[in-house]
Image (cartoon, rainbow, N blue to C red; front, side, top):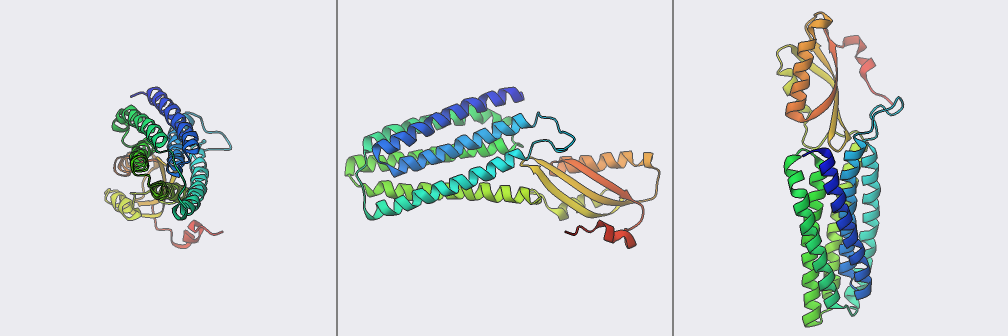
Length: 298
């Protein structure tokens, strides 16, 4: 599926989810439902996740500059970190009000909750089908998969809100709204923690999840021409672009003889570990006395 087609689908999904966010937010305030307001917060998180996916695809087309040699890929991570912090604060506010309502339940318009949450659920289902093909065709793209699972998770939350609305409508148990508020708080805290943790890990140049330094070193040393690998560093430029730098100890040979070996190394990194950007420094003898030059000190 062409990138432009994916971007168009993401734009439609963003429009749908943001519309439902506004619908649930104002519907929740009208119905005095904390669960519906909480689900609106979750919809906002979905809308932001979809926007990040669209932004990541868009920004990847921007060329690098002489001052930003890796381009603008990290903007995605900064946006994710800010979003995570905002959602964490939102979840804290909802938790505070849920505690108050659990102690002192307030009247909630159950029918309004049911209707608005049902509209939200239908929209989420439409977005899931809209993104399903994109996820299948681009299973390697962390952003698209993350957005898809966000929307799928919100569909489950919408079902929960509908259940609480039915309980309130038929039984008059207003405390169900506070209980569902607690449950949605848990989803928001979990989503915020995940966003903050992943952003923090990438900004600290952490090794990509699912990639092991030992496994990479083992795979490279398995190439017959490579005697040893050291000064191995692996990091994320953004959520789905991995980079590597390393020193490779090889037999002494001419520079033009290194090309086939370099191709082997790059193919192994790309095919086995999805590392698309690598810098290899070839050496014909161990670092020895100059090893101190390789150390990274503050």
